[in-house]
Amino acid sequence: MRGMGEGESREGRPRLPEGFLFGTSTASYQIEGAAGEDGKGPSIWDTFTAEPGRIIDHSSGEVACDHYHRYREDVALMARLGAQGYRFSIAWPRIQPTGSGAANDAGLAFYDRLVDELLAHGIAPMATLYHWDLPQALEDAGGWLSRDTALRFGEYAGIVADRLADRVAHWVPVNEPNVASLLGYALGMHAPGKTLMFDALPAAHHLLLGHGLATQALRAAGAKAVGTANNHAPMWPASDAEADRAAADLFDTVWNRIFADPMLLGHYPEGFGELMGAQQADLAVIAQPLDFYGVNYYNPMCVAAPADPASAMPFDQREITGYPKTDFGWPVVPDGLREQLVILKDRYPDLPPVMITENGCSYNMGPDAHGVVDDQPRIDYLDSHLRAVAAAIHEGVDVRGYYCWSLLDNFEWGEGYTQRFGLVHVDYETQRRTPKRSFDWYADTVRAHR
Image 1 (cartoon, rainbow, N blue to C red):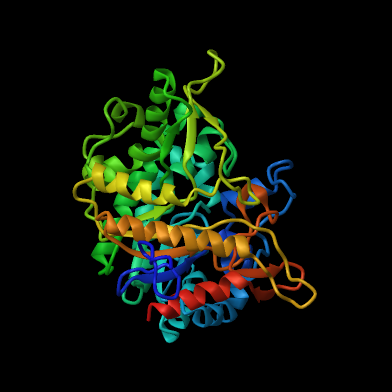
Image 2: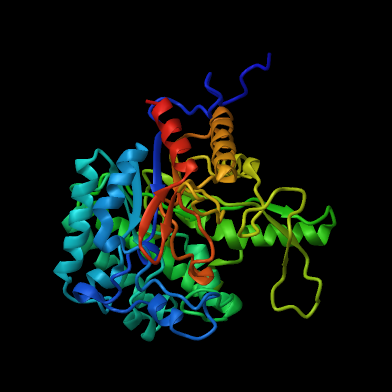
């Protein structure tokens, strides 16, 4: 008879410590819809999706999952799931349509209602202040390339905190500043679509400065717990060649350390401070003490020296082979999550308690003739990644919670509606919600821990 594996319960499910928090995550532009309602201003994603060729299926988040009108139905689904926490984001253009000035009370009122609905069902709110939908007026004035945007962000954080800090359990100022700066300002794959390459580094710095200023504002308003949601990935050299190892180390610095080092160590990696455009006092602002460190994980990255010596980038990303792939083409490497968590523990001696703030996969199964969405690959994915979390805890990483990405199928940025990450299938024509088999599996896993 096979013995129980590390992190496995007697029921054959992943087993996490007592008190471990299970939740789900979403983002405002991806699910809310109601693009121009109740005084909401345009965001950079409204502008970006309107530009021909930007989105693979020519769609936008104008309606998305219509969560703005259906949030009670969605919270009821969370309650049925047994979710103990829900990470959502607040749309800055709903609160300040132009990114500055007086608050739009109708926008604040929506999040008031959402938070109260969550609490009524015993679900702890985790609010993200910025999940990429920058007010277009601020982008017109320079966007995250401008220091002023970070200052405006701190003011916005104070407005939201004054209204919600008494009821929101966890706060995340900025989601994935590395993705926002690299894909939005360096490579042009996301809004606002700029292709500045290394000249985008000041945008990264201002996102980090915004994180620090928002953290200060949240704490001033009595916020209970402030953390992060940083996207991390282990970097695997394409070979043992010195050039490939050097390229992987450099990309590790650009993707991981440029963002974690200033938050957790109070300085940028050697040689990057001047490139970031940091002022002397900025790093003390960025390095505000954190109550938790949020990790978004999807897969490792394979990195090589550039094949073309004239390449504008000093590294190439290579395909990872030998692993199954999601419908997005991303490799499924559960042990990469354990590896990344251990890297963070070893690299940062004072690492705060960790939350997995995003982890999930795209599989595009829909309802069969009986209305069942049989997404066994997603069940396998979640099972293996929760086991990886358990293994990291066994190796000494203090992981306190796991938020599955995502509650609902939704607008997947440049991929539009062609990728489905949800525990719940959404028919975008009718807005019908159909919980998938993975929803039931996750609910059973949560129940087994109670």
